[in-house]
Image (cartoon, rainbow, N blue to C red):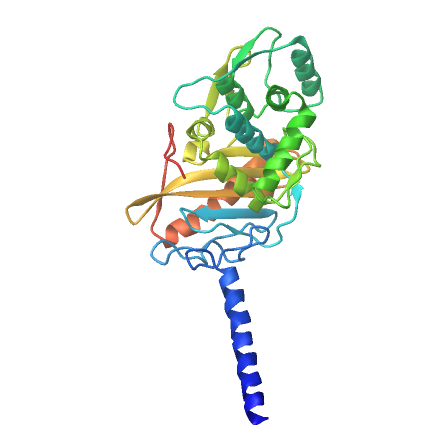
Length: 329
């Protein structure tokens, strides 16, 4: 009887050890590191950084709204209280990403060409009458894929987002379905797209989710080059400037702004760390108050700088101006 009890006790211990070991093994990836849950905030103290690169407690999260940040190949981190909220024109990052996924561009390629229809021109005029951000077009005007992406990402034309949606998917509704399918594929579990431009306040996401798609879009040199431009000249609209308040300071990216979303900015900038050139990328949302575009985008720009500056100071880093087509993330 004692021997049987001893055997049962040994079996119980072995079973417990197996469960513990299996649980730990399940949590670890192939490199033996415990990955973060993509649907959760990894921590509230800033990114997990290599000890010789930066101080993980140095990130200064915005006092309001939300943010996400990543330095180099470290794991992304996000501020507390990541809740789905309107993202305004940050939605156009997904629109650009899907366009480039379907019709990739490289080098100086211009891609496909569309001819602006009378309906396109009328829709733009109607959007302008409702104070939407539009890029002027004229029936019969021809625009290449590259020009459309420039018009989408620099002056942030809502009408351009609709034109791209119809070109890529045949209809705006079909394109929105593709946006949501891609969001699920990228594990953007707190994101819902209801339109391709973000004008609709029911298009919602979190900073952590938006950082996911922004990083994916950054794999395209053409995307990175376009969001680094301070202005663009188009056939009918003429020369249009970038809404990004930090583009001249070396922060490339995409803005979003309205009274529902506040000031939003998805950005990247190059930094030097101990002689190595790294990319600092992030997303800030819900910055500033009201509907003054310049004011709330200035607040978003300041929040973005506050993410980078303390980490840069702690690591004796310097920001490198972005120009041309920078190297990949």
